[in-house]
Image (cartoon, rainbow, N blue to C red; front, side, top):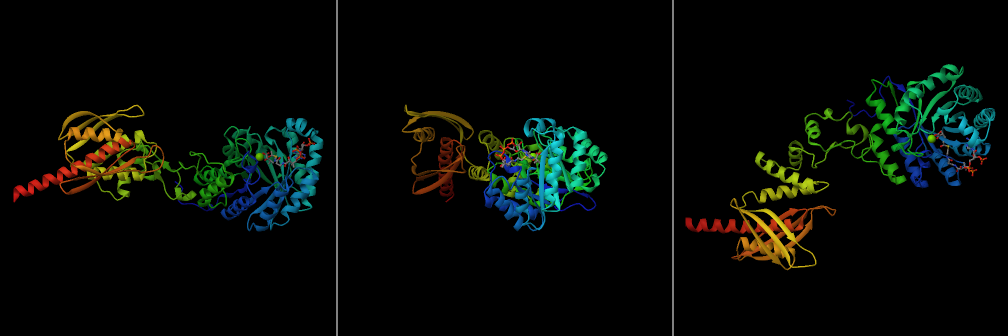
Length: 522
Ligand SMILES: CC(=O)SCCNC(=O)CCNC(=O)[C@H](O)C(C)(C)COP(=O)(O)OP(=O)(O)OC[C@H]1O[C@@H](n2cnc3c(N)ncnc32)[C@H](O)[C@@H]1OP(=O)(O)O
Ligand SMILES: CC(C)C(=O)C(=O)O
Ligand SMILES: [Mg+2]
């Protein structure tokens, strides 16, 4: 299992990580970022070890130009790239923006597939070839680092693709990207494509080959890694996998796949993986795109376990259900979420974490009530468990216990409570009306346990937030110059009220019994 490995593995073949969150990522509907948000994302990408930041498309708008130019100015380590069509206006805008960078790159692209050339560009293959060479030549007039992309490369006729690649390398392209623009390829096909192009193009050793995969069939990460197996050494990807349509290959998944499965993929990146979770959060907040809970590596459930059998395994040895440490991707710790699928092992462990040492009998009793609660509530919070513990400790020696309660309430009174109590092991039932449901419940208690105590306080609080939160009810009863307070908790306020009232009654009666015993002894 990968330990807290946050830096590159020694001896692994180095792959260039080209992050396009700010360009392809921003292209997905609704993910537009403000200037300030782009700066925050760019700074983080630079700090975490991204090799190339594609900062935007300078010809798209003045705002995009300014953002790329400012990222170029402020970036310390990474190469800063600007995207451009083959059109000279696009190349010039990109060149003007990235010239501020310590290391700037112009990334020019053009479609090479028959369907794109015929219908979208309305150009012949020969024209596309000429446009590519002219664009690369023009871009080299601005910078030494020029990338050329064959848009829709995976649906391109192989002979034509090889001709283009050879020509653009001759014109000065230093990186050749063959994108799977529409997420159509498969790992075997993509691996073979890179092998073929590299074998057939005579000057292929003069450029770095690059993968750029979309996730339309959910294979973007697998395809990217297959492309690397085929000889590519640059991976284009985005944080959280955001991007056109179903998105791009997710940076965090690629980085961790290479690190965790170094035995299969003898490659690595320069990414400090402990920053992945933070990067995911920054991008999610900048784009207002929430990360799905079960997203690999950075989803909030990626290191959370709810089922009892898994939790038990995790408590015995973390490698039973985790293939990387949470720390290696910047998550503080594994979480064992208590819910209706949890077992005793996790329940006891959480109690101990909260500082409660309980006997086996107490655990059994609380566990039964925990399961009842978990069946009714979506999330069981620590506060809910505290309430269970409080109740268990407070009511351990109660003579009178709530067995069941049904209340009819609403606008058409009278409100009626049907209450069943267990008094010293004997079950007794009573029905009572009241001025409101709480009054009906308390009247039923009075009918079953006649007493003179006066209700001095009745208070309800929510233990946690949400409409399914437990009610925490406090009741103070006074009799014979003595006052006692007890609490009851339950998602049903009426049940919590009955528990609190009975708790106070038990305390009063226990006190009276103690006093009688003392008097008898005297
Ligand atoms: C696969 C990808 O991710 S590609 C990148 C996609 N990103 C973007 O498009 C975001 C930025 N785009 C924009 O802001 C605008 O589309 C602009 C500024 C680039 C262009 O806007 P407009 O001039 O109004 O053109 P419009 O977007 O309507 O159409 C695109 C034109 O570019 C042409 N074109 C498309 N790709 C290329 C290319 N690589 N090289 C040359 N021309 C191209 C199209 O054929 C079309 O030409 P036509 O108007 O002669 O038919
Ligand atoms: C511009 C290119 C690289 C692209 O985003 C794609 O083909 O998907
Ligand atoms: Mg793309």
